[in-house]
Length: 378
Ligand SMILES: [Zn+2]
Image (tube, rainbow, N blue to C red):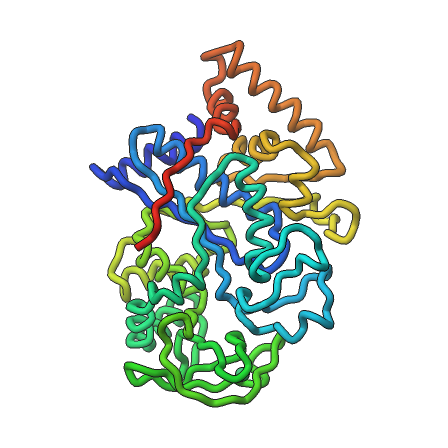
């Protein structure tokens, strides 16, 4: 059975009588998006499509984590210009369109998100797009931020029990944007009185950014606070009522971020854990290939090498639990075209001989994607 049909069957069994589903995926646009991130889009997009075609109603939400701090400088950027933004939320870093070309964007996060989105749409997916900073600013997460701060000791215990990570007793699972320097990656919350948090912008909290030393007090609501990702993840599940969300193999390791998210979900947020679809790595060019050597591994570059239906086919033909290997300099590309032709032959001329292959071909055709009506999150 084609993998998405099998997963949809399991989903329907897991949620008896349920008609409407929220399926979600996300990406932090901290630079050019690696082709591997397209796998999540395809896994979720194809499942949403298969669910819709089975008569259910699935909304596919894709979130860009633009409230995350800039914590690395890609080699293709001007170091002099960008070094001072290290530690600031990605939405507060300027768009690099002047250096890199392409369309002007409001900020750094949006620039790279747009580059990725162009290809997502080119291969026929049309998820509802959300930016984290909008949700933080609108107060969408406020209720959950309060809950997380009120339960900081229980969360510290979850970290310790699940992953063995020891957080100090005075640890708070929140960072705030420094009112003096605008960085979020450098602040440490030291107190919470139910309305405001006290914080310090610590010069040497992280290696990649320098805090300014400012000490202050501020409300953590309305976009001033940012949850650490391992806590933010289950908060997103809960606040958006996510039913289905897969995640890469690295997050699903025992004691990893998915395990922490599950415990936070059950013990703090009192909600069921979304249906998980763990998926394997995307290996680009084998171990020897580096992005500085010849062809790059970004979504944009790969999409300029192969046509959209072949790129989509590359992702659709493998089950989520199988790794995908892609070597632009080896036999991968000619093999892909041959395999695509073969699948097309089964679909058009040899009906019933190899049903899985027919389904792979069908779900690789971007024009058959059922465009979903946009609905705004409340
Ligand atoms: Zn500061």
